[in-house]
Image (tube, rainbow, N blue to C red):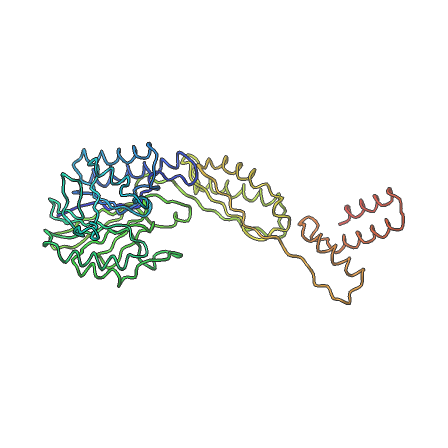
Length: 420
């Protein structure tokens, strides 16, 4: 009974936050997944559905991360079969990639269709001496076929792949196709996803397990299409997705049992939201954010020892100039409190619009009253007494224009500020 591990979208070398420990998370996740669910489970092989790397050009340390993980599989005599994704395929105008390098070094087998424009067969069997081939028949009785990254041309490529499969010798058992693309309806704002009917030619051609990648959320369709998602979240939005690695068994009757494994090293991600009102003072907004973090620590939603990634989104309408809040200082304070590896403070507030409609027939006094009232109402400290203070400002202006002395004017201001 063949048993294998399906992983995809590993993104070694992830550097979006310019944080070395965060980059290492992706290595530790892969290492933990392989040790727990490939080596400990004694699988027959591992498949990688694209995007082993975050970038096409990688640093030496990232190559070392990949080699270490692939080496422990090689030492356990577990073959690794892979394809390139859109992140790690060969740059335009070149014929090689870092996955090709790893394949040439016999760390994995990169399954690539041939160049039919150069009179090559679309699918050639794996040649161990040349480290080349589009498909391989494994000793466990499974055929694994590769593909390229096709982007918008995926529907047309599927027809070509299906036609090429039909020309191959009969498979020794179940057939698996590695294909880096996504199905529609899985996540929002994903253009170019495949419709289910567009992948059906592959099933008709004999594919029993379509091993997808690209979308960072786990999903399965109709018992033959499987996407494990990324092994680690690439951003805080992805923390809501279920993701992991599929541990798969195929019984003698061809029935597929795929279990999503999620118990491995992953950096905790905590998302919080604070909604403010126009009546909130600026100081109260900062105090509210601090209280929210303290509560999250007390309830263990945030565990400082784990150095989580924390996102706090402050929304609502501010009754003060939104730029007056020192968000950088607040962010630093909250990060220290939570011991977050990365603290993302999203300050998405709007300023209250207090402009009052003024009729063309309004007198000068009425215009002044409305202008002063609106200006005062934008400040949460003075908002409740805006009309009363506006009257005082008008009186202050009139008395100053009448030449009243500064001492008398100052006393008027004091009386206005002291009035309740």
